[in-house]
Length: 193
Image (tube, rainbow, N blue to C red; front, side):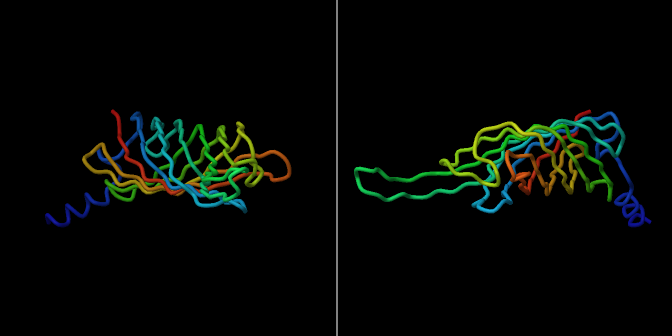
């Protein structure tokens, strides 16, 4: 009987280990980012924060900000002493600032999956040595959005770990249309009462 009771608890839906209506959630973490346009080199790391309020036990609305390095390339130029030379670095950084909605589905008292969508502005910091990647060649502020999925594992009642995969896209100048990148993110999650 004890094992049957424990099994029932494992698959019960939401309990104190998950955020429900009226509570706030905060996610702090890091990501690995990769730009998708042709010519983009290695991705790099980033940091992020999401703070939201649970509207219902499944729907959360909040704000998201991050700092994502989506293109990183280090190269050496060798030339005569008169012309100069040395090591140079190209870097394309993005600061997304979004309003975001998340919809949670509970798998057990400690596990949830979620889908999310965000809309906002993307602050572009381009250090590309005069080149361009996917229509991005200068510092700019562009509109865009994101969609993603994630898995939450809650432990110690108000603390969790989240793994997310998210796709970002924003408009660019000229014929390029949109610039897009993906990120794999790991967050430390907190439920605030």
